[in-house]
Length: 166
Image (cartoon, rainbow, N blue to C red; front, side, top):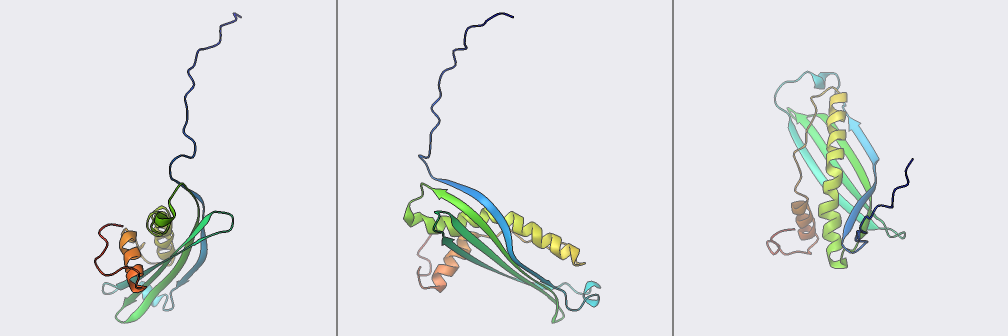
């Protein structure tokens, strides 16, 4: 075996924690309920169901410097005035957020972080409806910026129409 000289590899400076960063540390189901009170009659189809959906967001900082977000989805399907199914999902996430100015943290937590969680919550809802005997309910993407603005307006924090983009 021949001894080779050491390779001359230039050192590359990798930036540290200079810019903002968001990491999803954990995702979990905090609470889940599926009700199908009229089964098996509710599974026999009929007219097109009326589906109503509600979305709520809750975020909080923790003493360890991490942040928690709860994405609550309520879905009720009725047909001819009778409930077919009702789903309540409280899906949570644990986030590490660095380098974000304090005045931008709320928008990040209530607009961007739910976008990380939504695809997983959507899959849970689709699987749950399918396992309950219905066609999978595929939720349309949610505009979390609009949800944030609606919550702020309801709380009196943002006058109607004063914010262009969230």
